[in-house]
Amino acid sequence: MGLLFALCAVAQPKLPEGYFWKKLPNGLEVVVIENSKVPLATIEIAVKNGAYTEGPEYSGLSHLFEHMFFKANKDYPNQELFLKRTQQLGAIWNGTTNVERVNYYFTFDRDSLNAGLKFMNAAIRFPIYRVEDMQKERPVVDGEFQRAESSPYFQIWHESQTKLWGDLVTRKNPIGDHEVINTATPEKMMIIKDKYYYPNNSLLVICGDVKHDAAFKLAENIFGDWASSGWDPHVKYPIPPFKPLVKDEFFVKESSIAKTPYMQYSWHGPSYLTDSAATIAADVFSTILGLNSSKLQQALVNNGLASSVDVSYSTNKYVGPIEVFMEPTSPDKIKACHDELMKQIAMWDSPDYYTDEQLNDAKAILLRSSARRKEKPSSLASQLTYQWCSTSLNYGTDLDDNYQKVTREDIKKYVDTYIKGKAKVAGVILSPEANKQINAASFFAAK
Image (tube, rainbow, N blue to C red; front, side):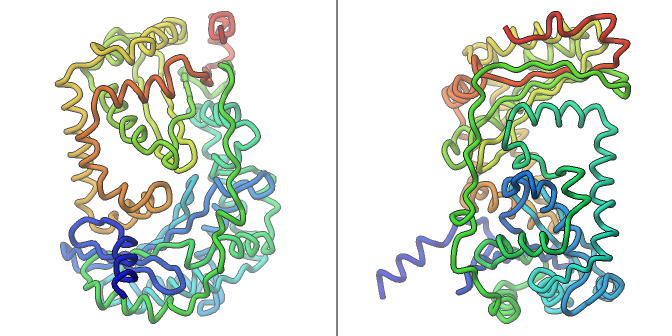
């Protein structure tokens, strides 16, 4: 009995004050966040699904599946009834699909918690995929893709992705493939459901003006008979490893909609699974580089070469990308921007590249940003489910403290392991007229 208690205690994740965790017998994890700032409740279900589970024949279908969630189910057999019920509940609702998470959420009056959980239960467990609903929704999902394609920013990003991830690009691109989206069938929706939509692959978060004991009881009563798959979807359907880049790849893309040029540089960054420490150092270093006082901003923006330069890392369980986006002030500044960026990157691991004051400023910015994000109770659930899907609940809880512990050695190790001297994908997008003037390929090429 003592040993069993000890094992249960170990399984409890570390959570902030006011957060409570429970795992139901069917494997569904439930977190209740008590926050009585406003008399509302938010419920969210996140599923470990998304682009990373999609081979080419399913590219974009996790996103379509998310749209179909709001259509019809056993209790509300058409969308009119579904929408009428959201109005009766006074609910604000939405869903998102990203690389490593699909999530669905409703916010309503706290007194509607029981009814809201029953509504979520019907939608997540008993969807109905009607042909007529799919015929309506496919162009909606594809329309999001088409709108994105009208942006030069998206065009260079999309081209970079294909070169960065190679054969596995569909596993990093939630927006999908036009042909796959427009030919999707109800049968394909059921295949996704039967692979990933199980309690043991999901997290339910109940957040707001609620009491955890009562909320846990409701969750168990409503979701307790949701049958576990009996197997781990990520063991049964393993995620293939992303092959490392072996050499630099440069490209020049002409587009009539690129009124101003954009440049993007991308590397394979750390994975939470294999190097969680580097994911934290990455955020601190990106924040240093974003400071107006940083050598990067001074050399590129203050000197008039670029109107903006942004460095980011996306925390992923499976290889997060490191990206530099830069907007030269004019096409004739592209070469100078590229040369200066390469010069800056060569210095990124130098001890005098940033000051102790800049390191402390970056840590303070991350702390303030975290505090701001936590001010809105309805957003707390999504912050938690992102960490649950791509890192862990413990990682998310300790993140603010761990940012403050990052050292110069941590940052140098991150830069030397993932960026400096490492293979990258580099692209520039500009108008045909601008390229005729500067012939970007003559200097923007791998050496």
